Image (cartoon, rainbow, N blue to C red; front, top):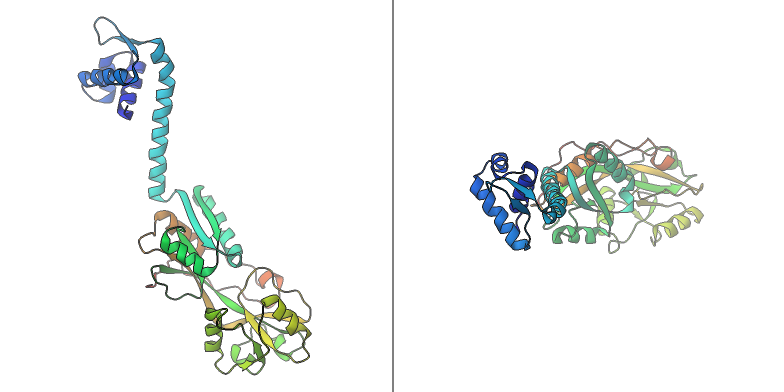
Length: 316
């Protein structure tokens, strides 16, 4: 059974004649008759009673029962075509986006804007570690993924979407705590509790490049444990970390964005998979409005600089 046969069946049923159905379908009357005969043969049912002359027909009881089902099947096929056209055009479909909690504010604002412009386009958020997100993009499990600090990655194209500052935590009573945006060079003499390279190579390399004469401090364990130790220590020190969720509210500490370096955040996509839907998501991410001044309500924090409207892919 073919959709064309159902289309001919519905046309004949509605026009009550082969000739008028053929005119509606812009085909030969004989072709309509042949398709009706084939459909009846495949279903094992008579759908029409032929009159005199045979081009005049009326539905049988079986034909009346099957007519709404045929109409529903044709309507469903038309919805499939319309949905496929929407996916091709990027107005609907599903984008599987790899992300993390650290990007939640930006992502939700971008999805809100995207929903206003393309309400039938869905984005499903998939949380995974950064290397897992990149691997999922390469394998096709994710359509795209947000990654931080990555400049090159094998098998993916990287589209810059925004930059963000590193955050420094230091004792509230230290003179440098009065600066809204300390420069890493100003903090270099103060002992730094830095995450070891084997734990976070991207962050470690970024910080040591920005502060080549940094002073090693007590060991970094976890972020929360390090912040607790920093707040309680008799000797002042500092630590640095990426923005991620709520900032510490310990009054013994002050959190400030560093003046430099800016950390790039990119959308990773397979080079052959920048579909219209993914491109629409990319545009929404790059166009997200900046958050209010002061990250998470902390005075002195500076929002990321605006990302370009059109992002270019880095080779990867």
